[in-house]
Image (cartoon, rainbow, N blue to C red; front, side, top):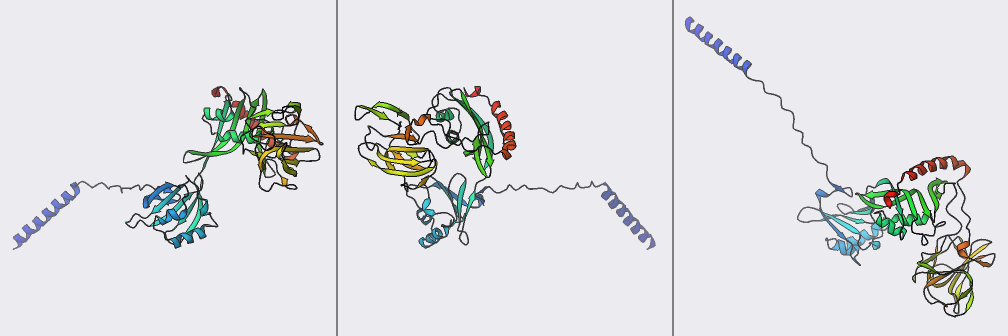
Length: 415
């Protein structure tokens, strides 16, 4: 019995030794690193995850209204009326514009219930109609990126054409025309005129949505250089030249956008209708019928009427104790323009026509100084207030910096 017990104990010990040896020699399993799954962020549009919806994009059609769109997506006429009323403080639904984009976000299930309707007011602003739970209407804006850019050009035909030829935003031409409207006649620019400009352009989704501001520019016209620097003074942004003089003057160079000057100031001109010579104390600007006519300066309307045997529809504006301007052969007058009404510089006052004695549509424009007619093309307009002495150091620093950058712009690449 003892012998059997001893043999049993020896066997147990041997088995234990073998198990211990096996455990020691078994290779240790390497610890596995946790697997990290990167979940891509949802694709967002108008602040909504588009992957969670069926999204339909379309353009507003001619005479299409909100009711047409929403009723096609199962929205009741009663609900549409409620939406239109609730929208009034945010956006007038009657102002949907043809060719503007809209989006319908519907559920992905079989019901395809409309959850959101988004209308793009313009390239940046949009309005959201949240129909998912309770009605919620709000405006939003797309992210806008602004870039400082430079451009230059040499003019061979027109400023607008030069912008197109140089693949520049043509809005630059309009902005520059506004800046220089008191000092440069952009319908009289010459072949070889040049420009250099530093401006800010805005982009949405890498697409240009417009020129935000021109910070500085140089325009060389007939060999003379005209500089303009954007400067904020007393919460008002104006443009000044390199001498800190205000570019805005009392009178505009011309009261309209015209194609050509068809007749100049003269003390003896052969009248195109009457066929005899008499004074023509004005400038005839040939332009298409209906072309807007604006006041060259701030003032008060003193006379308005019709002269059958002469100027047709006419308008007189007294600007100050010295100057009065006159506009004749108008097709019609702007709304609200009447004797005693004060108008601002650049305000619409009428439209080019051919009323009275006229062979075709044009504006007969005249200026009187102390009651006597003077050649409008020779009137020297006084500039507005220059940069104040207190702000002159700040302006000078800004001007010098921008002038340095303008001079770096290469004109040779624009040839």
